[in-house]
Amino acid sequence: ATITPLKTAFASYFPIGTAFSNDELYGESANLMKKHFASVTPGNVLKWDATEPTEGNFNFTGSDAAVQFAVDNGMKVRGHTLVWHSQTPNWVFYDSNNQLVTKEVLYARMKAHIDAVVGRYKGKIYAWDVANEVIDESQSDGMRRSPWYQIAGEEYLEKAFIYAHAADPNAKLFINDYNTHIPAKAQFLHDLVQRLKAKGVPIDGIGEQTHINLDYPSLSQIEDSIVKFSDLGVTQEITELDMSIYGNSSQSYTSLSTAQATQQATRYAALFEIFKRHKDQITNVTFWGQDDAHSWLRTFPVTRLDWPLLFDDNLQSKPAYWSLVNAL
Ligand code: XIL
Image (cartoon, helix red, strand yellow):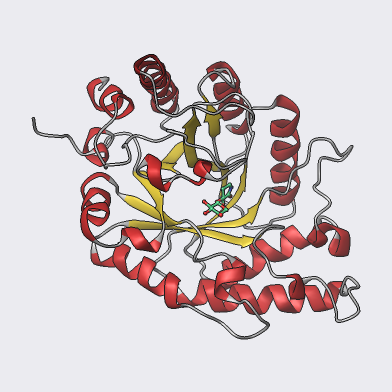
């Protein structure tokens, strides 16, 4: 049977994307990516620890290869990510005595990093996750107590977006987070974006990671957050979609059962019905990987098998894939 490319199936709604690692730039993985996806997100090679492992010493070997692959194949690129508490070297935040640096030092480092990375891919990366995972709904003000926040307070976000905008005025700038279906977290994120916009900070969109499970969260919670964000005058992108089979970290299966595969397919189809309903808000839907063997969930939160994506370990279409193309 002829397999409908995902990007064709959803062409009238939004570009469909995938994250990838650079070992997928060859062979059958590359062919699958070229066939199905209109956009790509390098999974790790644009993160700070990859691009600037020590101060001022940039390494663009991996990111250049990743971006060039996309350019060569006419794919859009999402840049992930600039300002984050994870996969960021300690030298960014701490001096040689292990003390947090001053705000001035932090901003100088942030600006140098953003100038170099965003500037290098100006015109090639259409969207940047400028800030990643800054909300912590367990804090009374909703702000994660990352080193960024500890040093500079909320102002570091203003600087990050301003520097990114200066480095590539045409790039769409996002604030990206996980568990955006949780009402309290969504509200903090909503209100933060509102405050930033009120100050004139150049922020274009909210990224909803959307790492979900087979039976959590409810789809209505996901839709509620999309609706909640829709009064902000920003776009939304689903940036890291996957659907773990597990409900908690102590479960471990040796194979994906037919029942689980069917349940996953049904849920993916229902989820995409929501995204399609809100196509005027949603400008991209990206899976966090093509095939199950490449999923980050094979090592996080514990090392175990998982089957969260549309293609199996042998790059064959799963029921989840068929439910998406047949539902249209
Ligand atoms: C993950 C990568 O997929 C892994 O390879 C890496 O070991 C850890 O990071 N939220 C994010 C992504 O914003 O950057 C994370 O990517 C997955 C969770």
